[in-house]
Image (tube, rainbow, N blue to C red):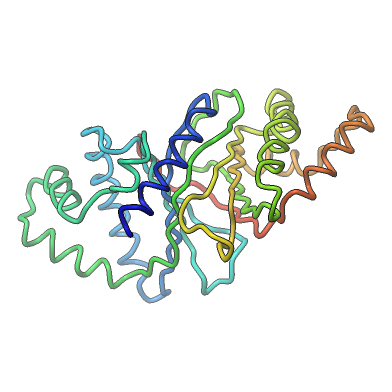
Length: 263
């Protein structure tokens, strides 16, 4: 049963990749940390930066981001989001095993023994709770030269396509909303935009089916974009926007700042 489910997921990913010009595969992890554990968790995060850099150098992952959340969730839900980038669905679903992490930890910290590394991980796991993990595929993105660096601001918009309008929603994002975002980028009001399709968890009870990543260089650009009004849009374009909005339900918006990025 498990094998057939994984085969189905891979089939969905590969079918999507046929239609995407440039496809990446991302794992989002939403992390909750108790206030009393915050110092130990940040120390663990700094340690993991070196570990993920070793994984990038070994071509096991494409990159890793660490985001601190500002709004979009209850304070007790989660405070951080990490994103791990993979080049294909197989490596994404396989992920980095415990043994991989231990090996890369010893590569990046040659002074540590295997026993010390295992003890560090055992302690680190008690400092935080993995509230949710979501597997996603990039299916559309704007043309830009935006650079990911510390301090970048992002709006993660969780969407749920209306039942029976899955294809309509994706078509609206590509043909209606992406050109709007591309125009904003060219006007200097936005850095980058990406549309992602959720693979796991999936089903009728899934909280979302898609996610858009809206990138801004800083708060100035973000607020300028929020205040911008396109007075040149035609009645036909406005009607297309309204139709596109009806194909999905915007479940939640998470505003976050990039604290660390590994490439």
